Image 1 (tube, helix red, strand yellow):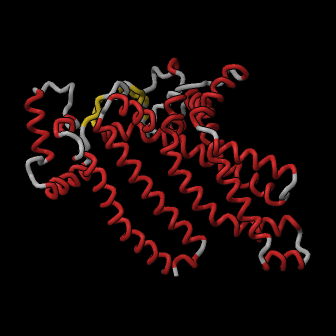
Image 2 (image 1 turned 180 degrees about the vertical axis):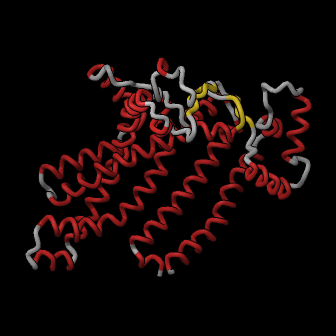
Image 3 (image 1 turned 30 degrees about the vertical axis):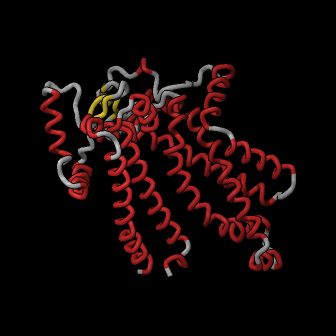
Length: 353
C-alpha cells in the first residue's frame, strides 16, 4: 500500500516536471525569428503553394495571439503529435514519424550497452573490492579510469581501426549489410529502411523468422555496443567496488564472518546484496545518459538512430528536428528517473516512509 502511495506521489510530481520541460522547449522555439519557426511546419515536397503553407502554419501556431495562449496551443500540438516537418538529407517527413523511425535503433543500442556494462561491471567491481589493493584491484581500477576518461567518439574510431586490421570480417558501420535488405516484406525503404512491426530491427527479424538479418544485425551491433559499454563500465565498476568496501566494515558483515559463514556466502548475501542498491539507480541513470552519449558514436558507426539524425539536423539547421530530439530526450529522461525511483522504492521500502 505504501509503495502504491509512493507511485501516486511520484506521478503527481511528474506533472510540474513535464510542464517545465515543455515550457523550456516552447521558450526555445519562440526565441528564434518567426520566419524560422514557421518553416518548421512547412512541407517542402508538398504541392501546396509555399505562401498558403505559411499562412496555415501561422494560424496553427497562433503567432498573432499572446504568448500564454500560444503555449496552450503548443501543448495541444504536442499531444496531437503535430511536431512539424523535418527536411534533412537523412529523412524527410513529419518529426513524429522520424522519431518513430530513429528512436528504436538508439534504444536498441542503449539497452545492449547497459546490459553488457552491468553484466561486466558487477563481477569486476566485486573482484576489485574483495581483492582490495592487490594486482587485480589495480588492473580493474585502471580499466575503470580509462573507460570514463576516454572520449567515446575516439574510442569508436580506435575500435574501427582495430576491426579493420585484426577482425576484417566484423562490420564497422551501419545496422545491417545493404546487400541483404531486398525481398523482405517486413522491411520498408523510406530513404532509410524501416522494419515492421516494432521498428526494432533485431526483434523484428526474430519475429519474422529471418535468421540472416538477425545474425547480420547482431554483428553490426558489436562495435558500437563495445564502445558505449567501455565508456560506462567504469562507473558501474567503481560504484560496486566502493559500495562493497564500505559494506565490509559494517557490523552485520563482521557478525557474519564471526559465525564462520563461507566467504562466498558472506560476499554474495551480505556484502554485495546491500552494495547493489545504489547501483540500481546508477544503471538507470546511465541508460538515460547513453541516449545522449550515443550521438557521436552513432555518427562514427553510421548508425541511423536519433543521435545521428540530431547531428544531421544540427548541420542542416533543421529547427523542427532539433526541437523534436531535445523534447524526446528530456521526456525520456524524466520517464527513466520515474522508473528508477519506483524500482529503488521496491528494493528499499524505507524510501516510501
